[in-house]
Length: 197
Length: 187
Image (cartoon, rainbow over all chains, first blue to last red; front, side):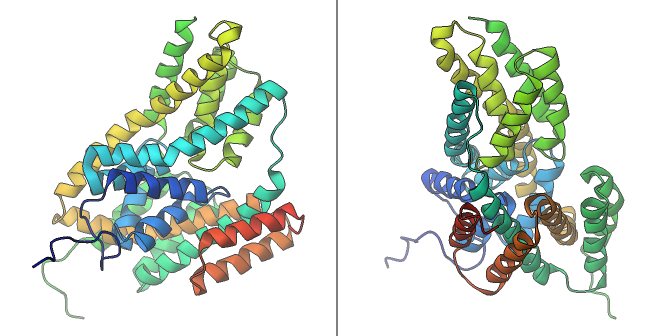
């Protein structure tokens, strides 16, 4: 039987199997470079959940929020989280390097130009268009993930409440979560036996 | 070489790394205060300009620290070595900003992986999902108000959203086309 030679990638569901460090680094490089108009979270989901199927949507969403609560840049934290899940400490490092190597080179080149020639690179026009599309990708992520996890009144209330507090009223993340996280945990807590109703 | 500058870079950014609860941008005011007022690495207007540059570049928005470290490093060495000193400062600042927080995430992720069957993890995965979707929509909403300046940009965002939701077109193609539209002055 020669079925032991498993092919990585698009197996059904979320695979926690081994992934090469190069694959991880390239995936996060792809995320970083593709996000030139912004929308890094949406790009992360596009690559990690949709293309590579390394995580389910549920797993990914909870990781995103944990990475936001913990100190550090959210996207770097997410790279550590995903990299560690797929290949331990080397995986986390490969993901960070993949996420930052090319962007650091680009930002340094722009910084060199700025501090040497004293002018900001004129990319504004291209970025204006790209940013409009990157915002759209983030809206699309909210719609696609929302379709999966917003069944029933309680999730909709939680969703709407944190959108209002954080997005419209511009509360900081921590007070929003202090208020809503206990409610959502209570709601999400697994019950011993299914209630009949 | 002025070693003190590099020690300041290391201590400032590793400290900010652990203070940046809620994301890198939460420590920008503190970073500004230290880099401009306390250490005199750059002028106020330069800080504003490198912020704009770091936002324009791809990748994590926290890469402003790369440029702060670069500028600090430029001035820490003799003029003929300025670029070497700058790049060293840039790498040091970037690593210092990522590693302490990264270690913390790693520790939490390990506990998380070992707690697959715990009720708490199940509660977080189920209960936090609607909150995360709300936060994603909130950031899309906030971003749209800074990225979209007029009705044409809003229209472009709307059309792109429909494409992303209802088709399987590679998002990169859409973002690229939108960039070209911006370049042509359509939005």
